[in-house]
Image 1 (cartoon, helix red, strand yellow):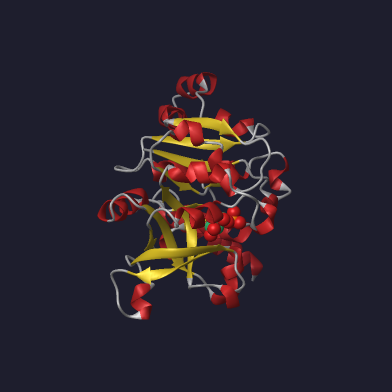
Image 2 (cartoon, protein in one colour):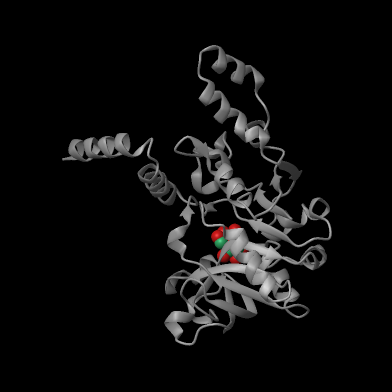
Length: 298
Ligand code: G1P
């Protein structure tokens, strides 16, 4: 099974940094954000290949996943074998590229990978969020298997005033009774509708799509005829709403706190702090630097 990671966006939230650098290559500590997402997809029982939907304006992403023998040789000749090995790692990952020449929505980006995924179900992982070491793909596959191979999306409770930033589901919980419990981690909903970025008064539930999808290949045919929706873009959510008329779909409630958001400068900075506190090689130096910074601020 393959995973698609859309990466052709302009990264406007990170301008001016993204004027000359793809937002997917922003580092979290010493590794680009997109590598965390690729590694999440490739966790055991996840997928066996990743297709990055790139823009031709961002060749740096492909450079990153290509071998750089000169750099590796230079590091080895200086006795930095471990670093050479880390540099080499990215070039060994099973990543391929397709192109989206005119960014006109998430649905359009996914459609660009239609040929590459073929007639199999596939994952879509949005690239400004990653969930380390939680086997997200495996958990979604298991829900799909329990429901006859249906499509599965990951959802989480949305703050009431933020429904207009996300896709929101309508449906019913299949495995929990209490309302609060039905929105907690592990609850599974049968989806009956999907709305992209509704105002709070129009939102059909409190659950938003967090950017992890396991989709039936039929969605590609529907995307091929999908007209523009919210923001005048071809929305994946709208094609999924049409898929519902033909096939079942389920939503797995996940704990948003298990994921790391890198979608805005503030969220990205907080993710760096969190990863530094979790990294035995960084935690002491990070705490010291942070303490120093706090002291300097008085
Ligand atoms: C996209 C999807 C939306 C989803 C969101 C998650 O929106 O269209 O349904 O909830 O990602 O981050 P975007 O962030 O591209 O506007």
